[in-house]
Image 1 (cartoon, helix red, strand yellow):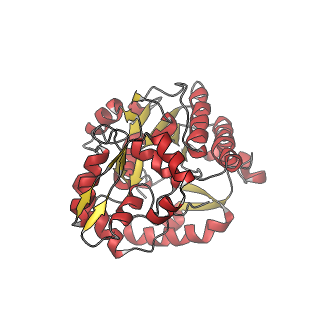
Image 2 (tube, helix red, strand yellow; image 1 turned 90 degrees about the vertical axis):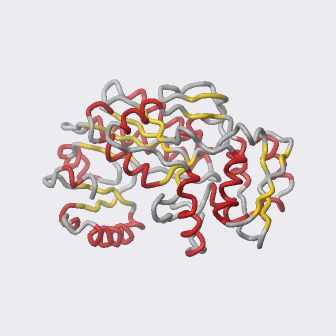
Length: 348
């Protein structure tokens, strides 16, 4: 709806996997109530398809859609830290190539908007700029690796396809309402701390006073993509959609304790992220007891800081500033307490 409001003559074609079509229709009905000034049922066309198919599942209609599409927004990916490499590669890498092939086929394409992730940085140590990509980095999981390989493809295509790349950091719920559809990342620690009546334990690994966890609310990501995708100056740019001043791990523990309303003890473990993951694998009862997936441990000792120079500058020009996690954490906790059963499973 936010995109369609720019020009009421436009329509949206949503490529949806067959098993999610009914869910997509329900989403449109819900959005119709929130945006009554736009008749979404006539403005949104749900098309059954799949980016893992070279023709996107469009079959004989492939060329027809290529002739009328003017903008492509590529959000589709498998986001799961435990995903198997073959499946991740099929969706995130091959799928991206198929979308790029479609963009090349479009005769009137104004822009390809590609949603990547800050974590194409992998385990890069230090400041990762918006121009950085191929830095010889290693990766924590196949999600990171395949999103990196996909962005490499997108970067190479930019010589012939007009493109903007958006790299969100760790996305949490809405900063105003706390609403979310999935509990992962920092939610694992919030749920762990909420188990205790008065005192919580927030173990830190690596340098807890230096290492950060970069968390951004979903409304910031939506606002940023809406705003940046509507400007000419974003053409050809890559944006790290991250908090320019993220909390350190120890600050994160303090903020969570304050919002939950309990004292948090933050014992420092003399381990780096790689060692902590190894320990959790050897002693699986620890992550099982904490409800913290082993592969999520690495993000509590993450060595990368994200430079947001271009995104901060271009978003400031339209009045958008990334809020700090501590400033809206109360809303996140309030929603979590009211909705404890939301899953952490990936939508695949």
